[in-house]
View 1 (tube, rainbow, N blue to C red):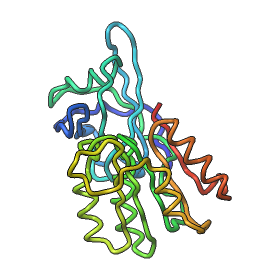
View 2 (tube, rainbow, N blue to C red; view 1 turned 45 degrees about the vertical axis):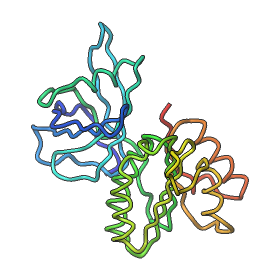
View 3 (tube, one colour; view 1 turned 90 degrees about the vertical axis):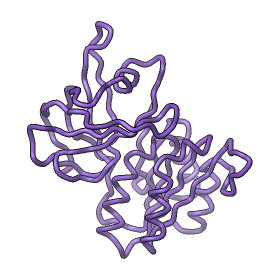
View 4 (cartoon, rainbow, N blue to C red; view 1 turned 120 degrees about the vertical axis):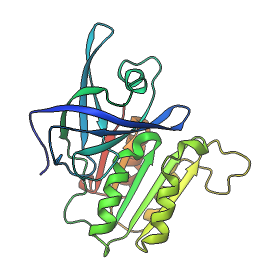
Length: 237
């Protein structure tokens, strides 16, 4: 399945956990179905009347398929419409949903893969890695994840645990505004992508984050000789 068409029942909020001052981890269920069919990396669209305006926003699913539940990881945009609304939702509240939809998924045949994320662009990769590491132990996966501050490296403990568990996975975090006790990389993701690629041209590169970063990484890889079909991307603005 690559896409589920039509209107889905409402999504009901189960729980919301703060991961940082501006980021929350949301747990939703779709009560009227037993199984919510989707591929890791897809998104859902929420629609609601907010401040007298009908607003629709798409959010990447931050979990692998399982039952009728899914997770989101969102940062609040104070001047926005939908994210402040979601950040004030209480457990039990519902929101109209369409999907899951989208083509930002692991492409068959799955090859050695580098994933590049900044900020909440990490969301689709969490599900993609959970599924990919379990189903493709013969392939190597590397996650390059950039944030400004340490608290922006959401799910980092989980990724480090996966690195210990799976011999075919490497996690490479980087901060551009680190605290004094940070011992990791202190650069943008682009140099780390070039380092990871080296002279290889037989890799698939998945990129997710804000437009400027995604466009920059795509341009760098194309200049290095990568075919556009090897660079799968999704932009968050």
